[in-house]
Image 1 (cartoon, rainbow, N blue to C red):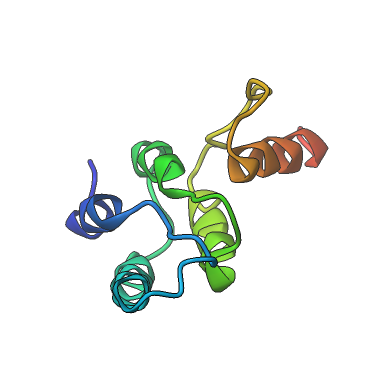
Image 2: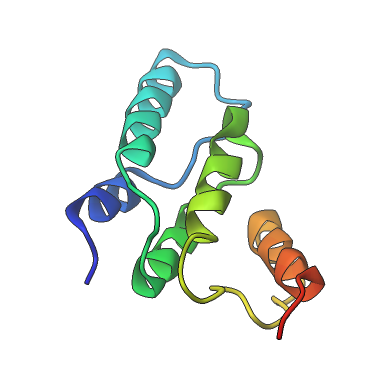
Length: 104
């Protein structure tokens, strides 16, 4: 099951670039920030997989880290195999964090 808050955030995404300093970019950022913070942890595995498509190309003034931690709150890691070359830096970061984490 995917909650309405997750659907709303995905609809608004992906995260904008820090290079976008337009007024429209500011409004989009504010709306995305509110929507992201409306999603309570933990997310489901299905929600985490859906949220993977919301990462942008950079840090997005810290929102990308918030999204990463939200995705990592899922019961299962969403990225368990090495992404192909050229994959989003945040997907690669999730892979690295999974690869380096202790597992039973």
